[in-house]
Length: 288
Ligand code: GYE
Image (cartoon, rainbow, N blue to C red; front, side, top):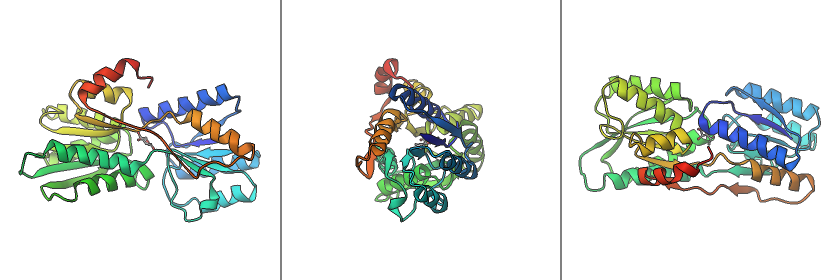
């Protein structure tokens, strides 16, 4: 298997890489692995080299949604099946990949928005929201924004006053939050598209003398260890889980595809949500 990973931008990604590498070993799959450092051109290069090496299966997590048709057609011409892992492409030609394995990001955004709606259900005051987006053009950034918006659309007291990308990194989240605190010092809530950006935002809030989780509420997506720890301490108020443990399912799918068996076109990951209390309970047994 040739696997073209996005990068090492977050705790989620590190856990995802480990899951893929460990499961390949366990399943006896020879893994060629590349890290694209969040650049599409690097992923395209890696995929082309896997085609040249005639691997049995190519799997990758597309850094952005668009611009894949050419290279995926090259894989198709070479008869190498492609498994989309974690993130989707926006291609209309579904014959370019055998399956898409990963989370429903729209649903995750909705869960975050539904929590916000519930949290402020008794208040009629305006709620000023700052959104820290994931990598521009990536499936999780697009879908998590959409789901969140949908969940809050019915109530005009919710207002997204600022929305900027933090590229899914802690440094990015911090930088964006610093700027937002200057332009919108009266925000009530931050919705960050992943834990790492939420953790960066916490640093910026504390440096500005605000108490994260109290002065400004925070909801994030992922539920990696550092995020769950901040949640258990009350610095984050709610986390929507997105599981990075895709390795075992990926190896299973790859082996079936190689054996000529059919697989479902969409394989969904099961996920939950966490309050601070639930984070405290879950943390001791959390593997990532
Ligand atoms: O939420 C974020 C990572 O694609 C689901 O990418 C993944 C996202 C995840 O950098 O932490």
